Image (cartoon, rainbow, N blue to C red):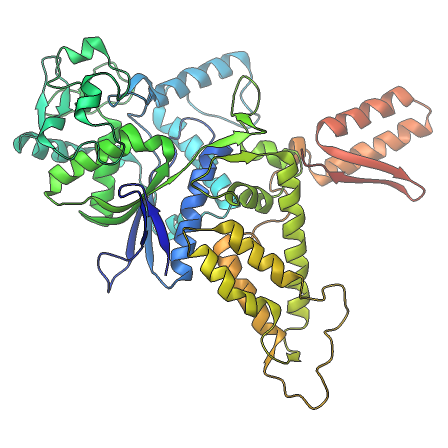
Length: 516
């Protein structure tokens, strides 16, 4: 059984489906597809994937939905209304500037005036990275596209959702034409985040827009629909041509695809307020139920080398950046997962190297066990014996560090350097085979999800594939032979800048990809 911290009750509780004879329903707040997802985003998505895999490890069937937001998510998320620009409009401006300056990546053809084309481009980038990192929901979506919905496909359902809230006196059309949710109609507002109506009225619950407050019944009331005939993406509605608020999107898609009450809802820590608080309020008022999601799961932030992730400092890394330094997707996944989800994680390049080395040892163990799978042994083997400790750790609020320790302890008992297993004592009868350990390793990896990923970078370092690297080395050798040492040094520097480590020896020049 999995015992998991619930952000709503602030206690660790057993996880079980509402419908005990049916699957467990799980909704994850996914990316906003206006840019390439960075590794801080992926830490949250990977922890949701770890949770889903752990539930399956304990025998649950899981229906997992993760949205890809393509409208209505604003740049200033600290406000429940979402201030600033729509992030899709920000992407359009950025792409137009890149196109004008000629800085668009080679091969990218995106119509910066078409928000759907922009969303498609960044959604495809996200899916590529998510598959490389082993997110199961992305593979589900190959067969069931509805598992990764986009809000722009659910506009009629959102309009119907908002209309019911108005009809039931949970929402109103303000003097500025905006439809707001009436938070005073929902007494439980603030239970998840602690931002109660009283604290928000006093200004303690987040930024308050003075102009907007003049038309609201309460400062905490949040936008459901905004009439805006100039917005890049807009639809007809009973309240004028415009677009939906960010919060109504997830509630609508979750209820449409998973039902009026779901088992688990996940997201990053920054989603707790205002997004998830607002989701709970509008969803419960829409359904009349006592619960929207029974269990809330939130991942804390990712630091980079002990500091906040920063675009200006060049530390807002995306997967491609790490692959360009020679990391494998498997190592990136492990490095982002091995710090407990309720602690801030500190990503370091040394940690990435350590994760890479750890996986290489596990791969050697896997290969050794596969070679000797049919060989009998006496009693349970090291990995089979460690499965209980692994299960206990991962079932204790996803203690992934304890689970990894159990696996590494098992590794110490596998003679991976030996050509053959040690012989069984004379006269002893075999009670199992090394294949049993291989099967146990497979069960552990089904949770960690690293041994079946690519173990070479899926995009070449610096855009340079092996053939290009070899061609550079040939050109360098020719330059040295012609005593053109300046040209040879320039080629060497180019390779180093692309993350390639070269070594000259008696038998010629060898190369490897660096990490960090």
